[in-house]
Image 1 (tube, one colour):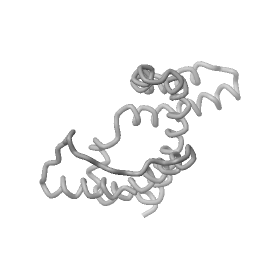
Image 2 (tube, one colour):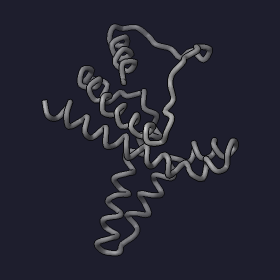
Image 3 (tube, helix red, strand yellow):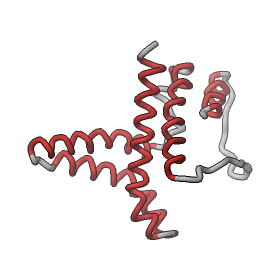
Length: 150
C-alpha cells in the first residue's frame, strides 16, 4: 500500500534527488465506492507507519502528506473533545473551535470544487471528515503497532 513512499524514503536516504515531473504519465486504480475509499485511506495511514519505522527521520520531515490533511487530522480530536464537553456540560465553544479549525483546513478544496461542482463543494467537509477519521484511525493503530509496541 505504501511501497512508493518506502521507495522514495530509501532513494532520498541514498542521497538522490527526486523531482516532480508534470509531464509524467501515471496509471492507478481509483476506489469504486465510498467505503472502499475510506478503507484505502485507513490502510495507507496504517502502513505508512511501517515506512516511518524503517525511516525514523521522516517522522519530522513528512513532505508527502499535504499540510491541509495534517491540520484536518489535528483538528478532529478537538471536534471529538468538543462533543464530549458539550454533552457533559452544554458548553459549546470547544466544539465550535474544532469545527471552525476543520472547516478552515477544508477551505482551499471547497473553493476549488466550487468552480467545478457546487454540490461537491457543499458535501466536501463531510467527505473530508470521513476521510480524516479513517486516516486518523489508521494512523493511530499504525503508531501503536509499529512505533510504540516494538
